[in-house]
Structures are given as C-alpha cells and as structure tokens.
Length: 284
Image (tube, rainbow, N blue to C red):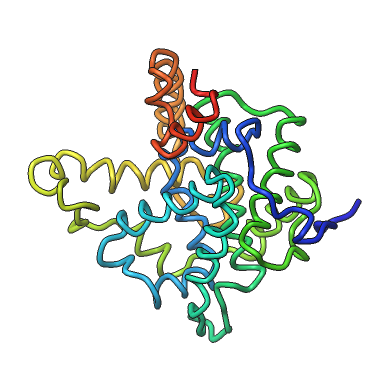
C-alpha cells in the first residue's frame, strides 16, 4: 500500500465543487460544536502550540482567534475559481511563524508536518461531527472525502510528499500522531484549566449576553472537546471522563440529531457555505 500522496501539485490544483462531499459536510454548522476540539488537537502538537503561543493573540481573546480562522478556510473550500489564490494567501500568512518550541526543537508553520497536521484536524473534524451529531460515514464516503481533502490541501501550494495516499494510510498517520507525537503542551494545559476572565469574542457580545454565553464557551466547550477526543488520546493524556459524562454526551448527541431534522436548510450551514450551495442550485 502506498503511504504518501502520489500526485503532483499541478495535477490537483483545482477547486472543490458543489458535487463534492466536502461542500456537503465542511460547512455544516454541527462542526462548530467541535471547533474547540479541533483547536485542542492542533495545540497538542508542540510545534503548532509554540507558533500559536509566540505569534498569535490566543491568550488575549482565544475564541476570536479560533472563530476568525473559519472564514478564510471556508473560502478555500467554497471559493470556486478564487480558492487557489485564497489558499496561497493563507499559506503566506504563515511564512514568518517559526522559532523554538518548549523543548528547544525548531518549528516552522510551513513545515509539511505542522501545516498538514492543522489541515488533518479540519478534515477529520468532519468525520467526528457526523459520527457524533449526524450520520456516520461509510467506507466509500470516507475514502471519497479523504481524496477530496488531498485536492483541498493542494490549494495551499505546499509539498505533497507527506500526505497519505488514501484513507487507510491516513488512519495509520492519524493514530501515530495520537500515540507518539501529540503531548500536553502549555497552550493545551492553559485551555483545559479554564479561564474565568474569558473575554467575549466580539464587542457586540459583551455585557448580559456574554454573562449568559460564557459558561457555554468556557466549561461547555472544554467538556465537549475532551469528551469527543479519541478515547486512546484522552486516556494517554489522563484527561478525566466519567460514565456520567458519556451519558450526557450521548444525550446531547440525540438532542442535536432531533433538532437538526426540523431546522431549515439555510440554518444548517455557515453563511458562506449556504451562499455557495444556493448559487450552485444545491440549497434546497
């Protein structure tokens, strides 16, 4: 079995289209429930965490930092002919993000390991969201979605040599990252310890609205991030998770599935995604 992507950049530099599974799943708002999980998985990588700690405003306004990353990535997926230019722009934003991590190891945000790991968490997040809050994907859809993720990743204009060739190879890569590469970084520990002074992501949310929402953005998001992590990683990092927690998560899963059935289609997607789907005649 070939373990790395065999295709060249020029063969895959074409945007994803409305018939792709990625258009169906990446803009699904249920994924927003797991955005803190994506952030946690990313910041369990020591090099990525060091870049975030040294080159971002995470500690000033963590939710704003996380949420504002969504729109550009949506633009790569749903941007049509503009997607390659957006991908290159995102890549270039990371050119100066480099240094040494907490263990004295050099990192660069554009290294194949770091940039692909960030991408991998977004790809795998689609699978996790459907498994927890939607309909689990079968093997054929998993492979198709993964092949689309290769096409999507190529739009960033980075080397493809470390990209797994198929979904089975990706699963081996993913498990190896969980077992051997991820660790409890300072950024991840800071997030998991909670933040009683957590600021509102946006100015319009300040005041009484934020007093109501802050527990969801703080304790609720952390609880969901931990509970939705792969169990092997949660156990390796000794993150507490009880049978009672699991029952609550199962109940939340059933609630989201029930609510989803009655939501209008326009309320099921990020606005960027819904606009693209409607323009392509898929928002029905």
